[in-house]
Image 1 (tube, rainbow, N blue to C red):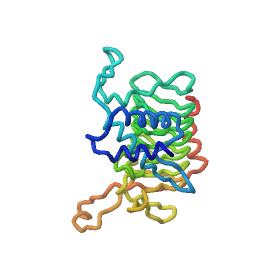
Image 2 (tube, one colour; image 1 turned 135 degrees about the horizontal axis):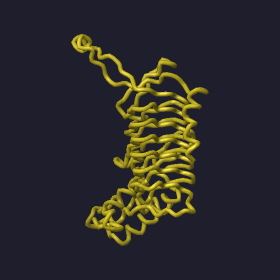
Image 3 (tube, rainbow, N blue to C red; image 1 turned 180 degrees about the vertical axis):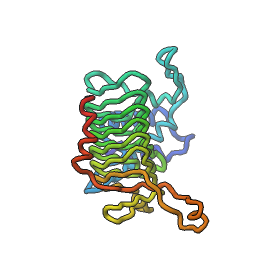
Image 4 (cartoon, rainbow, N blue to C red; image 1 turned 45 degrees about the horizontal axis):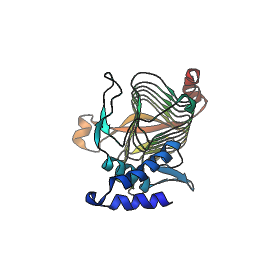
Length: 277
């Protein structure tokens, strides 16, 4: 792709040699592709997720090129940001339902058909939100995060953004995942399709997840991110510390636990939102 080569070259230039007008054209072209969803920060290829570092480099280039300006629409909604990072323009024909109350979507994010966004919510540049997803109040979709079809991000859930380093995997939430209230998914974690994260589950690159069904422990490595298996139901839990003094004090560490795999009962619990669509 010619655009990829241009962005790679521009990204490596020192600031004093970066011509804003020439570089801005490449960045705006990248944003058009991101808005349409035909270019993504990460893609599912050959049975695995692969990051596209050049896309993230292009977004970082946009921040470097930007100048801080006032972007206020009126006296009631004042904000100041880089002139390269305006709000995304959405029309009724896009078939995206945005309930009033403070939601913001940055330009360069893809939002699919039938997505519902409750206020206030935020979707950052480079994010991909696929068709039929529900984003509830106070939910965050971070930069370059990839959200699948018919996902439910419950109130207060945080899907972390991973923009730097450019080669790092962003957070991936696959199709039909249920993310409970006040959950946090960070540091390139992958949640496979149809999984359920109970309220309060926190997943990071340093979090081991204990599977009591399959008697396994899932961890991130230097080569692979933390990955939650398909249909897994994850709940918050604790595990003891292997230390005599800590045992006497009843000290335990937070630990997510896969307590079961999705069944008919969990299907009923996650189907209640359909009445809202």
